[in-house]
Figure 1 (spheres, rainbow, N blue to C red):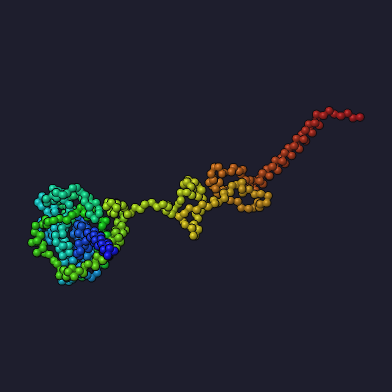
Figure 2 (figure 1 turned 60 degrees about the vertical axis):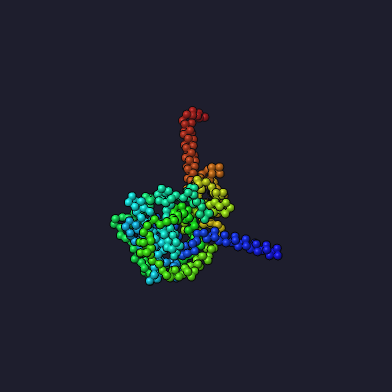
Length: 448
């Protein structure tokens, strides 16, 4: 009985821990189709866009990985078109998907209001079928510019989200008025933008692709959380006072097909691959190696910041020239100036320096012909021999007498022969002269 009770208690504790873990992992999930279009990412893209046409194109770009919606269930990502409805000084910019050739579904709506003093307020509101009721995103305004009652529990510019320490960056309505796309839609010559594409007719630059599982999509955007939640936040109320009368009643489009699929739970399959989250994070690192990634440390709950594009230096040197066997640059240039480049032998690492026996440098004294050598043996070019001799270090050089050539030996012998003949002739002439003088000066002999 005790064993049974202990077993049941352990199972209950395990089930509770599993439930808490699942809730912690899915704290970003709404459980609705809107999970596959991150409105924080949409707001950031809108801030960076220059025109509504460019915003629409970037929103449907597969490389941005913002649009992951498949509302009609054809296993293809839907094209989102942009439609601007103008109400005085307020623009209601609708993001809409054509479900079929008869039904359209609004995904989200920008409301942009400009006051007489030049202040601009913007909100992005998700459709209640896709995001639930009152899902409103807006910039984090300064306390004096928010137009709302300050939160008495506010303690600073930092907050925790999904185990990440998020730093708030506040803005003002005048700064929002300077966004490029906001300036564009409030220009006097602005022509109201209404996307001309519809179901079955799409721009030539666009092509469809299969949607990702939500965990992959969420893991990819996880690395942008500091940018998303540091600049934008959920808002409790609508700033546009004519939201219900002008838009919700007058312009909102919704699809009964989408509503039916939600009720039947057809969108739940997107949450069936939690293991895809790591692959999504890896995809972000591959496509954005220069961005800072933030990983929560489970030990202390803090965030470890690292740059994925910069890897720590390995223990071994990468392939290349080894410093251990490399000589100085000057010696290498001198020694290898007249040496042909040799390729590494097959089977060896081409990037590793091999210590080989240097070729023998022959001095002039080594080339002297001996008694057994043939005098007609060809000699090396004196210039080449001189260069190879000079390439040796001073301690290894040998001073040798210049080698006499055959021609110089012959010339020397001829010169010596001529000198000896001249000398012998000179000596003969001197003897004759001496004899003649002795004859002239000698006294006459007496005859007997």
